[in-house]
Amino acid sequence: MVKNNVETTIEENKVTYKRYFDVSVELLFEVWSSAEHLAEWWGPDGFTLTTKYMDFSNNGVWEFIMHGPDGHDYNNKIRFTDIKEPHYIHYQHLGDGEADHDVHFESRILFEKAGEGTNLIMEQIFPSKEELIRVNEKFGAIEGAKQHIGNLAKYLEKIK
Image 1 (cartoon, rainbow, N blue to C red):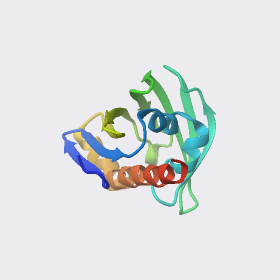
Image 2: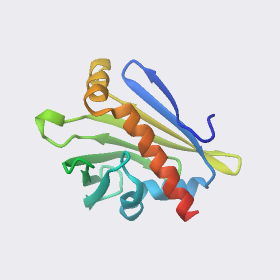
Image 3: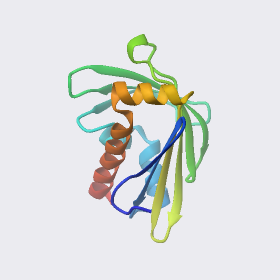
Image 4: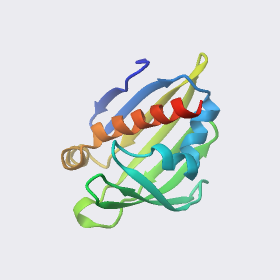
């Protein structure tokens, strides 16, 4: 396990990101499950977040806007499909309905106790290998996810 950086593997239509955090499983789960925490770190570098609505429960929906550094707003909608506190969060990214940048994928966020800290494992599963390639080429999805996890690390340093 890479302690300070994100370990990334790509298999067909799935990208897996792994990183160790020197915080409890409970705290790591909490910062993924609260709109107040998410507003402080969610997204790649330079993005900010506004939550329109969040029902953090099985089959609940989270609607939010990611404000890009280029001034563009990106509407997003997530449906939580399976949550087991503090072990995992599974969700479907349902896209934003805008044809030019609509993105659909599943995510599995796993929190595994590792000594005094927690291993975070984030899987993104796309409908096909071609869709993964498209989203990565158009939006820099893999680098964006690494930055996303890096922003989580910076936020955890502030609050732990």
